[in-house]
Image (cartoon, rainbow, N blue to C red; front, top):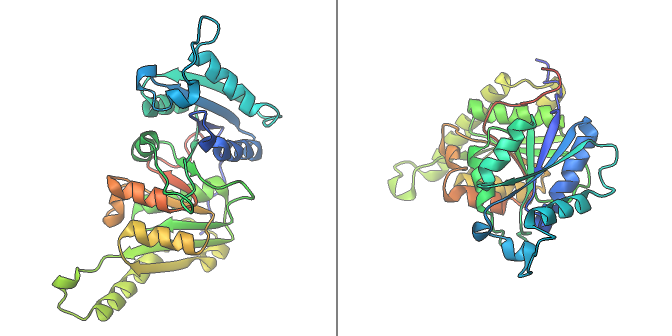
Length: 306
């Protein structure tokens, strides 16, 4: 079976709150826009100031007066951050006001963006990351793939990890990632085994785990047979299964192997389907320590070759 041809979007959207947490996402967005010859849309959604979580950080306690509104200040910050860094790229700056998550989705639809990028606030090696409500909202609701950028852009994504529950949603997420970023040098499909709790075991745990691992490997091979992959990539894929809670299994593998990109599809059929719902989302996204692609809707929206 032939692999998906890379079909990069016509436009990418950087969602920024104007804080330093989005600097790395800005670098990645500029790099992808240049690589794909795509438009770069930069949006900052300003909620009503009395509800703005970052109003003191962004605007301090200054008396604005008639000459400089928060909107004008945000526009100036956006232009300053882009100055000299996006030469040769068509850039559109958008300022919205209202609920942040829906505002980002609205701009993505209006600008025909096929990917949303945003940043995470902390480096978990030194401090537990604190995911904002907007990031979690996008993870659960965005019909456009969302790339959460944590790391500096040193290179393309060379090592990729799929959080795999063998569902069509995981297949869609994998094919979306490959269509966007091309084939990595190394691709691992990580599956969390679902074993009974210790108190419910009637068979020795090691035997149950071996049975579950054989079953997972068989499902993994069926999953790969259904995916559109090149023969070369198919031979290099690693099927990984481990016992444990899905968020912990996947994030531990990503950390131990220093992976460049984690790929997650929502609404799967097993325990992985809850990764983007409730507290599991914060544990997975906070502990991963790497860039993460979240795929909910149809893949490769806004492609050049439609």
